[in-house]
Image (cartoon, rainbow, N blue to C red; front, side, top):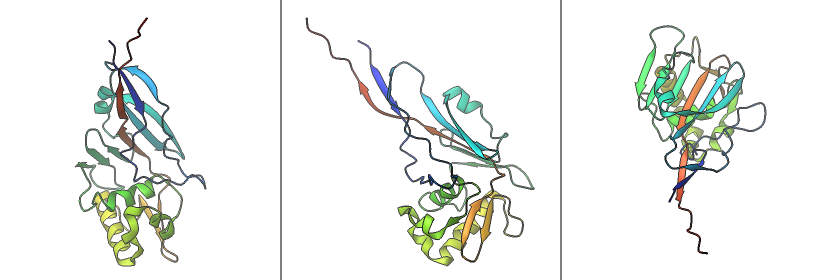
Length: 199
């Protein structure tokens, strides 16, 4: 008896809340459920933003491990736990699991809100639509989180490479000239066993 597995797009990145309007990158839509044999290799979702557009593709595990992040300015690989950042100057930054001082509950969703809208000015109101970012209403907390992001990326306010800030009113953008890649697991919601037919 064959076992069938259904694949859908990953839900583990539910905190990502990219805008659909104003030329923003749209988080990849849910991949239609397709039946595949259980012994088929697991696939992973890759999203690459470069030169003003994004491309989605699926990778095998060996393809995921072959990536080294050298072809993009920032790579966040959820499968290997590796984060690679190419600052404007200085050495390549490599982190395992998370970027120092960028926490998973607020810092990571803050980063993702900005990354998924490259070139677009993101307002405080935009950020507050994400339930994980309610603390960013406070200007001191916003400034602290942005400072942590910049430090983790080797970025500075004096010479922004990744994060460009406009202060009045407060708006932040991921520099559209900076490329990025994310790799995440495709969810496997259930295993379906075909029913035996009775004649």
